[in-house]
Length: 347
Ligand SMILES: Nc1nc2c(ncn2[C@@H]2O[C@H](COP(=O)(O)OP(=O)(O)O)[C@@H](O)[C@H]2O)c(=O)[nH]1
Ligand SMILES: [Mg+2]
Image (cartoon, rainbow, N blue to C red; front, side, top):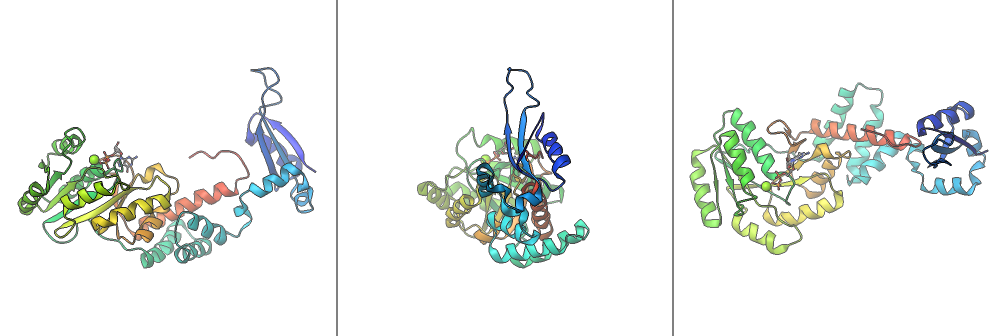
């Protein structure tokens, strides 16, 4: 039979329900209730409706509210772990073949130490996703970061410049943004890091700067943000950049949006012939495993992962182990959330 419990918090109400109906009690409904007198408690401010597990199976849920809830309830918690993980990974845009393999391994390594579990996931990822190094082996390396505005291109250039210089490389920066306000961020980073920088307003100036780059081991080119849905803007950038050797175009995307739209956006930048993918703002998502989906669907080798705004520390090279960590972390959190009967989960 459906029982009602009231308490100050959802957790307290669940505790009451479980104390009476047993640890497997199913929570069917949670709602905030307003006190009868404003400012005063009415046996707490949360009401939940719950049923004992055996009653749920024997049909107590024919109650209309319960039936409604059942229809909208995530079924994930009733699935075996591998099926739930597979479903979650596919919902993040990862293709069925990769998602199934990762999910099976995630399930089979449940009782293994975290490090072993991640190593097993990394082995699968290495077979499905391509990786590349930044900068590429040849000198001078000329790398242009392209992508929508605000994804962290300029900041990532500052991180790369600083990291590579501390490894002994002679680095220079070049801005392609003619707008003095938006281009000032690159100039400011260059001054702060004491790295030479210049601004090129058009293709001729870019060609000159690239020719002069022979003195550096690495020239990092910052491009203005480009609206992927504005074909004229994309074409203008392509005409300026040339997008051919010796420039390595690196598509930069922030993983904070909807994966399918990010793939759509990414595809619009393929006209600029990018040969590497950089993903940023991994710290601003709780579904970081979608990074795999982007690399897989865009078919671009993954070069780097930006995990925060700090220069130079919040940028790591992409690797199977790093992606395995993202997969394990996302699944651990998402499956725990799906299994939790109710209530907001912090973190
Ligand atoms: N949280 C977070 N913020 C970032 C990251 N990368 C860049 N940012 C911030 O995003 C904002 C836009 O970055 P910017 O480099 O100007 O983007 P751009 O328009 O692509 O050049 C700035 O406030 C950066 O500090 C990242 O990986 N994580
Ligand atoms: Mg910028």
